[in-house]
Length: 268
Image 1 (cartoon, rainbow, N blue to C red):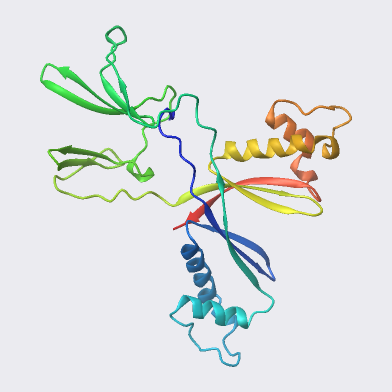
Image 2: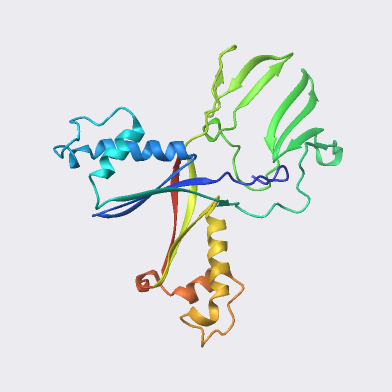
């Protein structure tokens, strides 16, 4: 969907990091409370690791903080940390992005109806033989489909402050008077992980394209010192994918230096 409307900054994400004998794990959460709740779930699922130690009850405490404190007090080989990270937006706001609803005047030659557009969602009206027709759509010029309720954008028909109907994500209509919660699915985020001999760094992005762009920017700043083919190509190519490939080489060559981009769930 094109976004001629409001340009928003993604909310920050909370990172739960755990280190244990089997390796390292990162879990993402929408809040510090959610991150600690995930940590508490891990502690309870692993409680058998500490049962039998002096002072450890057979069942984990009901209080999350107490359960976490007790578990890690008896697991010196494990480490955890929780911190906040910014999420980089999917892209810079388009030129001319509107911060208020925009009126779209009728366009008789093109068959356009008068409408209001905000953040890519358009509500219009036209007169048909049976009366007025109100429609809802997007201003997308490509094949991107209308966002469904499962993506957090339900359609509600309201007249004189009364809800007549609400469209579900599958296109069916809820009975009159039914209240459907506009619950978004588990949020997802793109993680860019880069490493070298001295560092292992994660950055968080609202889109895969944003993660790729950040990686390309990083590659260009280190081109002269790190590119595998720097002698053959002294200046980083303008094409992001090409620059990244030349800098790192094929994934099977990633050892001391490398990267990965992957999608992860942000727990509520």
